[in-house]
Image (tube, rainbow, N blue to C red; front, top):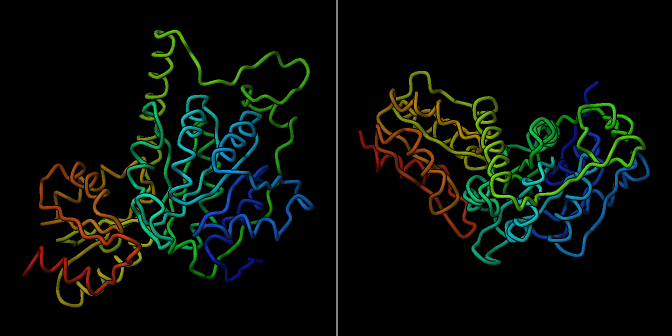
Length: 359
């Protein structure tokens, strides 16, 4: 029988982490995602599953604890909000350089700087282009519902271990704070050291006797050797781009215009499509589920069909750049967004759409 609850997005992240067999959560409070750590402390999973939950002294400490846990082959996770993720960027680069799997959640708030505690989508570039130094990439999942906040935790762990890479769940303050009905998954077992040793995770530091001496590091002082490693990473990223693109479409079969939006902006976009259809505009919506890898191919195909594209995001314009690259400037592509934590209404987005594409 399904277990259904009414939960906040942040709360369900904590519940999902426990249920998917997460071995350790290391984090630090910051609005608007503090409920993740608070919920874990209330649920006390160390008493039921043995999961370690620790409030670190800072975001820098938390991401480096993730490095240690990931090096042992365990499922480890952290969460933060925009300024906190910035502090984690060095550790993320180390994790990518050591090819260690982990899950990082960013419940975005407005910036730059400390900015506001209101929702934003202005960390798109940071997540998809430059999450840290050294030119690495990480898979980025963008939930647009509380259910997806739940579902993407397990998916993120699966992808992290499949490709030995950090995976980010890029949410925002709207999804993190809103409450919706959610179907919870069954409890999964935590991995034992024996299981890790017997699987293909032969890189993991389990301390098991007779396994030889593994070294987990991102350091390589030989330029030629390090170039070979970087080429290996780039091949892995191409594999991800070929096989892990995820997206959803709404009424694009006959669309003459296309709206592209992710996360909470896509929820607004669904209403805009409805409003436009009522007035005779054949508008469709494409929602990227993976921001990296980006659904370049599907947007390119739709750009051959439509007369114009509007990218909707709660930022000054970041998603629009990938939209223009994907559409190859074949049709006009415009941006509409609000900044500073302001959430646009469907009505104002629709008015902006009509201003760009009058009948």
